[in-house]
Length: 82
Image (cartoon, rainbow, N blue to C red):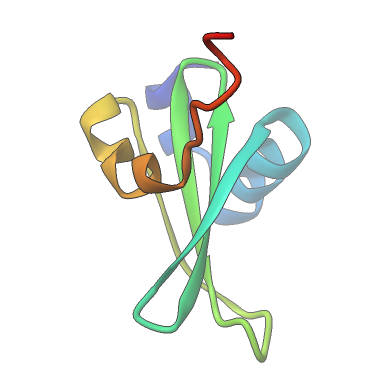
C-alpha cells in the first residue's frame, strides 16, 4: 500500500491497516500522550492515545525519515557492531 492510498482510507480502515498490516517499531511519550510508531509498507504511522483512558486522540502518517528523530534517542546500538 502506498501512503497516498492509506490517506484516502477512512479512520477505522487506517487504524486497522496500521495495527494489522504494520510493524510496531517503538513507543514514546509526548505531552502526556503515548505515541505508538508503526511502519506500514514504505511509510510510518504514529498513533497518539491517552494512557489512562486508552482513547486515540489523533494519528498521523508520513514517509520522510526526518520525522523519526524523536525515536532516535531510544535506539541502542551496543552489540550491533560486535
